[in-house]
Image (cartoon, rainbow, N blue to C red):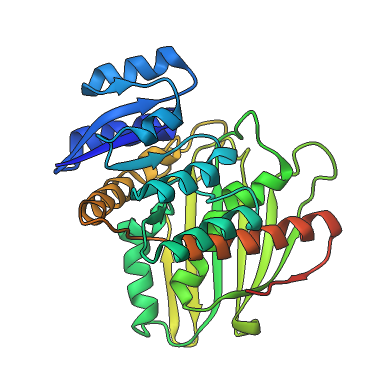
Length: 321
């Protein structure tokens, strides 16, 4: 039995606690922490865990064998580094750090440790649709890949959303998925938006992979209003393969998206989160990690930083990794 602590109990962290308790065998949530004390106590009571006073106290607890980090982005790198120092496997939600410098520090610390302990929560790698899509692409089902089209829409932005965060916190999912799907690194990015003030949303990115061997588009629209909608199409020299909801909706607007499009990310990726947490518990029970590595998450951060630069300057930005 793996005894786990969870730091951060917002929508993501609370759902992780629920999934671990209800759907993942071989694990027990024994400690939780959130700056909202009452919320922490409520979540802890539901699963028979302890609500502790600080993240540091949770990480230092010898009864906590592994840690899930779902607290705000600025805490991700410091808490992951603390887990590495304590020798505890950790599942850290994306992004791994606020910018490439922070994620690079995590990569260096893990390399110095000499074993992999960090899993980064890019859950799309565990989604059945994305996995089938990748298998089709990697097995040559569409010939040589030449184009990839991605759509990433939310019903409404988070109250704290920023123009830079559209790239660094939302588009970063696609920045991880694209190399995972194609086997090629992102080598350049250009990000554009029709908005000139306020939250610059939607945004459209054009990316070059493998020095231009593959071109990809990524649309991120946080205020799409109708629901949470994620799509992907891979175009090759021998065909195309698509990940998209069935065509059940003629008009999607104002929260009326029909059965094809869920209200938020938890419903769309419920299977992925269960699979991700199950795989992580299995790996952490053996003292290891799975899924997206710290290095892969750092590479996504590097591309995101280039994307933010492009958004600010209006220029195509090369990516060195």
